[in-house]
Image (cartoon, one colour):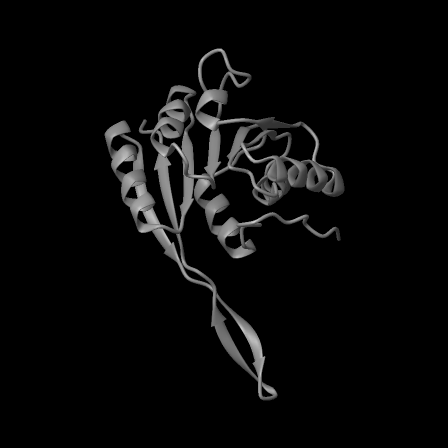
Length: 184
């Protein structure tokens, strides 16, 4: 199996990806936005879950775009567009994306505008990962204003590590998974 090319702040831990994608509810043929794609690891897992997924991997950082492109090539991810720039602009009217079914948001710069654009694009589900409590609060407030707030899940993962010939657990940083769903 290929190794993920990494960048600062990533890749998202596998356990967090698993919970986030389960909350997203991907379906075969979906149009999926990976906002703040970092390494593309979330998109890679999403492509394993849903067949014929159209992926829009978005990041403003050059190192992230390079890592995502390398990882997509290494893992054989097809039907993906890696887009450079500010997500709220790329998702705006006249941008390269006409509609989105589901979105994972790992980068939270301009979260208000990003959520507004995803709702305009008719996204049925949006998952935001955050580590800062202020971001969590702001995301909840915006999702409530937009009428899509569903829930927040706090995930704390610990990994085994050797100590004196035995095993202990070292905690990873906790992550808040904020879920928005289109109300029907």
